[in-house]
Image (cartoon, rainbow, N blue to C red; front, side, top):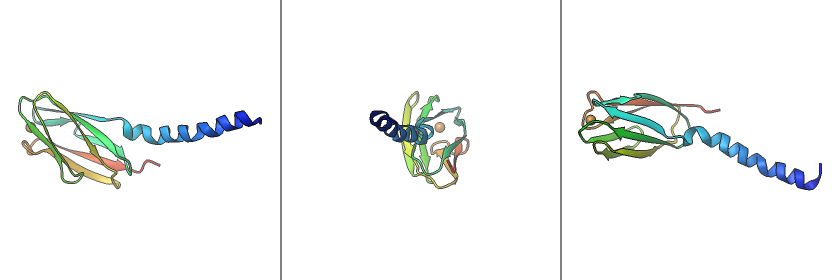
Length: 115
Ligand SMILES: [Cu+2]
């Protein structure tokens, strides 16, 4: 193999590896809270990677998106969309809730080994 071609192939490898490893966790997880319930109320993420949750509040009341397990807490006013970073998580199931309507607005994130 001639040298320029070999160099080009070697340069491509790390780019392909990093995009494959990062793609899943980098797509935001989109949640909606409506009638004081989350949709979806259960999501799966790869263990060991940071991820982003994007939450839209379709209620006409203020919510507080919170998780003791994942250590975030953020106000989301009516009609707004917020983003919170979470992870990296060990494999397991982690709870989140709306602190202003915790009786109905609850959900879970399950972290699974990503291979
Ligand atoms: Cu609420």
